[in-house]
Amino acid sequence: MDKSEKGNLDQVEHVVLVLSGKGGVGKSTITTELALALRHAGKKVGILDVDLCGSSIPQMLSVGKPEVHQCDAGWVPVYADPQQQLALMSIGFLLEDSDEAVVWRVPKKQFVSDVAWGELDVLLVYTPPGTSDEHLAMLENLRKHRVDGAGHYTTGEHNNAVSTGDNMSGFVCPHCSECSNIFSKGGGEELAKLTGSVFLGSVPLDPLLKVSLEEGRDFLQAFPESSRYTAIS
Ligand code: ADP
Image 1 (cartoon, protein in one colour):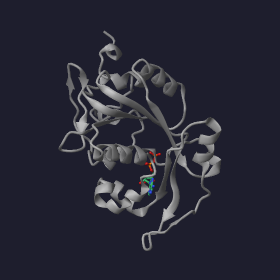
Image 2: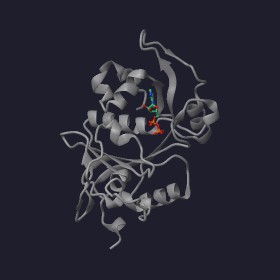
Image 3: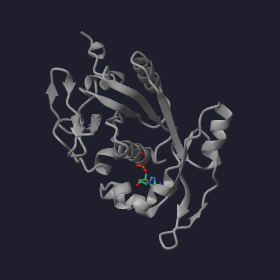
């Protein structure tokens, strides 16, 4: 039987695709922080990372390069927390298991249902930058199961107007905490208006966030006063 028919997404309440037009706009950051915020809100969350070039999510969640195993239902995700409320599966985990140069033969669209997710409130599917045929194929495959939303992220500059959520909008001064707009802003908001999609909110460029990501620390736990960013609802 085709693995996509195995029903590994049957117990997943909501599936959300995370997209961006290009790399380096903070998609790994937003995915990680969104997953942590949902977990803080008491939800059981999964992240599927289908970026063959490797996202920074495993490092940001302090998971490293775990050995992954298979059970009858598919690949067993790893957990980023002792309570096992935040599950992660990355194509990178499989590639790193081999000493040889591996050619990825399984369609990425199928990988999502190759993972034994179990019960989840939300599954975030992190996709590589761009909007390729592969993205469309994955969307088509997920439609069979139900996709509840797609978050598209960019920096706030107008020339990147392809987004419904601004990252790096403004810079938070580490001394006085004032937020200044060092780039032009509002690109995401503008596009949301143009496309009739919902503008989710904006996240400033914050040195504390960068440090916590690099150290694999939970930002909201390490810096609870930063809940001022919770513009995303
Ligand atoms: P992408 O996944 O889109 O390639 P990343 O999430 O890896 O981008 O972000 C690129 C870099 O920018 C990383 O070093 C990350 O720590 C940093 N970064 C992203 N968003 C912020 C932010 N709001 N404040 C500070 N640093 C950020």
